[in-house]
Length: 321
Image (cartoon, rainbow, N blue to C red; front, side, top):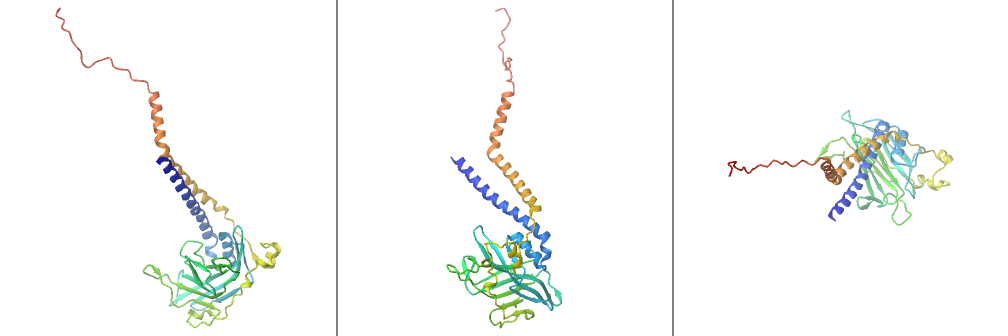
């Protein structure tokens, strides 16, 4: 009985581990695609966002008009902040949303260009609709470290959708409004193993008056993002736009080809399968196989003849008696 329990536990562990290994292999494929096709094109809006269509499975992003754009291309604190409509889907639902994209970042400290500054993009909403950990809050942040490998959470983008845990107020049809958008940076300095961000923001856009200092005076107090400007699904004849609607609304649905990177998944999974098969054999079959081999070997060997020679003999004296 114990033997079967251990076997069942082994199967469960291998099954769970198989899923984890597959996800690791698939993500390695995405990372390879990102490094070869996207990483160096961050300042090319269309190319970078087509890459996000590919890696994140977005339905589309809207090329124009932009929902918002701010650009500072001179001085010590240069950046471009743009917001555009996007769409994503689950198996049963389609969601409108928008993406904040920060690029063209050039920061100089004492006349020296900061190499790979780490960005923090923070939003403040009108309602506590964001799920952060186990809490509902009206503020949330994403971080982008260009010195680290690609991850879904390590891009200079912040996505918000009209769905639960993002912009939708629970148990209602109300959609939260983006009140404030703030961007800060770190030059990589650490204290107690934590990144130190400049206490003065790099950029602030708000629906309200901005009284705090901002680096390079990169602030916009006239910020106002209309919810209806990015909720496009109501304009389509069907759930997804057809070809004519894609052209009319200037939507980009293009995706790159990930198939040339499938070998990374196959290679990882084949190595894993070989390891699992070897381990399974050693744990459950090796002992029985060896016993069978020894038994067959014994059966094939001819029996050894018994020696007729004895170790001791009784010698009779031949004295005629």
